[in-house]
Length: 321
Figure 1 (spheres, one colour):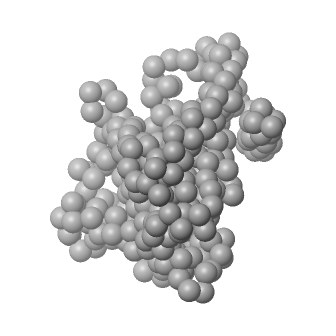
Figure 2: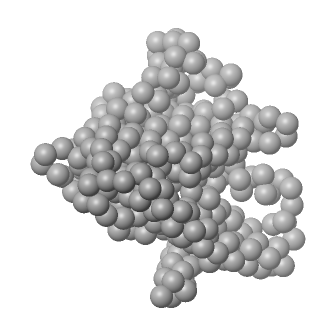
């Protein structure tokens, strides 16, 4: 059985490498095009600004990739972003809790949300991932609004702002957090049996079960990662704007899904590339930034982003066929 899993790992590895070709070409094309259209685009300050803006969605997209990889989807991530940020900032501001303990509490909330979604999906009732995520999205968003009375939390400690707005060796700290998370995810998916199990479950759940993979445990763990990365993004976002906002994270789940799918993830599960996900997030972030520099209306930006998403994915599917 282990030999079959290792053979599957090799096949998936080859497939993952090929999946990032199309989004990579699209990213290069966008960078070259926008550098010609705007003299302000390809500057160090603007590139760092793009990376800082992209980092939050990119972090959320890591967890979404895990969920999609197992054949599911996690619609609760946007709400988890809000609740984790709110919990962290409430403890900091209203209860004067130590910053590190407050952050730990925010991360714990994200983990618990992920465990709850994963448990509903993998339990005996086999709740569809879409429904489980939708239910958790409503519950978590409601809790964030209830505990804050719908009001943002201001006047946070200055040191908290470093997480989302600070620099380390002239690199924005959120970008460093993003890179570390992607490296950890890559190692997990590429070199561990747990990572292989995610691909196996998404590719063929019954075959994975026969191979001895614990479906329930792996599914719960995939959604736990999704909840955790959403919590990290929520804390980074709250630190960046220095506000705990209960309405933060709206439509983040859609951006995370788009980044994962543009990067080569298959919605049916079994195929994904963590670096492709990062490229997908960069494509959307660079496109938005470039259109802003060109003073394109936000209405037209939505149309352009939709066309790029559909075009990239369609080209990738055509290339595979």
